[in-house]
Image 1: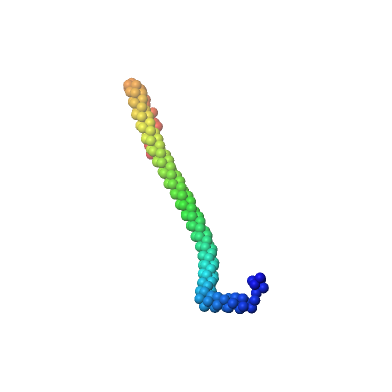
Image 2: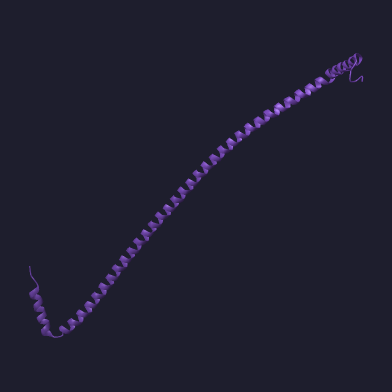
Length: 164
């Protein structure tokens, strides 16, 4: 029952053994253990700071990416607007050129039709004149075949001439 009710000698030797153990631990183990605990605490603190820094950088990168995305969308909108404007200008220019060409072709066709019409009218007049001369020649040959009729015509013409 000596362990359950300790005697003074046992308490002394236990205290002495605990003191020696405490001295040895303090001298050789306590400082390295505390140093490693402080180092581990510092490493954990540095890791937390780096994690916070990385989190802040991620937020910054995300904001930067959002800004780049916004700029890209704005540039895309500007490029699309310019492309639409250029397309509209090209279409309008093509339409204008087509209308000008259409009007030029119409004017040329009208002019050609007018010249052909005038040529046809001139040709018709020439044919009518030729026919009229041929008819008049035949009529005159028949009428002037008789000398009395010739004289009568001459007299009529002389009477119609007004001398000034």
